[in-house]
Length: 343
Image 1 (cartoon, one colour):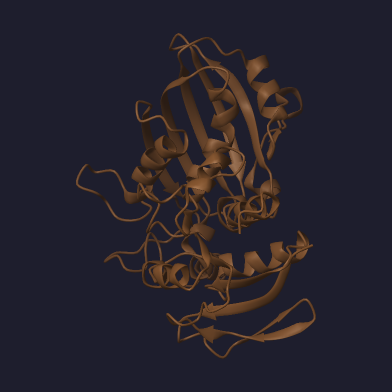
Image 2: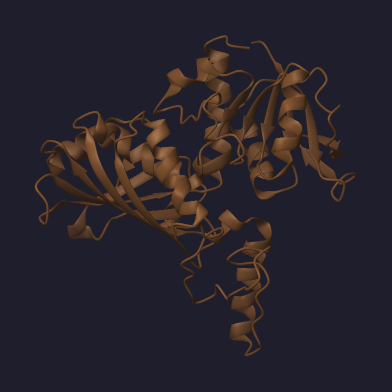
């Protein structure tokens, strides 16, 4: 099998580390691996598959001879993606920098793989909560066109990075010990106010826009329309940070043009790659972050008819934000391109 030179930008972060886990698990065919990060992390040592790698500071000259550049996300994408493409690499980017660029495909491989061939050097990974939702929407949309979506998310602190996960752990420990709880990260490290996440919910993810929706909510709205190639679909979203380490959960209400029975929905969801139907009310079986963390598949349950509208369905979907919501989706894009000989 042909092997490829791979660079990981953001190798020391949560998504970067998950890239490494998945490359080993999935036996991704790499020849050489370059670990890149900010100047602050340069020089760190990473043990991977029996070899020690030294993290290099990312520069515009870091991508020589690199064929696949996996970007973990963040502001660095805008700086380094054009340089990587100029050097001949295909960039699969986990940041929001290029998602709504009409020249950049926004891809979930199970949902719209045909978009990959349209790339001009950069392929965007959607927002984590968007990926998890469209994995459940696509097989239902193929049964009947979707008119409207109302989604509320319950997003794990992993979406805020390793620092947010560490802060949740520290706050729980301080609470148990009767110590004063401090908050410095959520809802966003750069924001002027921070709130405790332990034993709390924060109805803000990212900054507020002029329309009073948060940036995260608008990502779900705009990205879903782009991925599903349906600008007429009406979507409203409320995104909430919850005190869970990994795996996002979402409550989704869908209005279809035609009737979609619960039985039909379960059937098409169960047949869709990357989706597991876990829906057994009699045995209290349904998706939960506790059981989807560290898993590749998205789980769907609590399927039931919405009796308040003519063609409505409710469901609950759960998926690991760092895996399918980030690193796995990006790696699957690369795997698809290898399979189709697109490099």
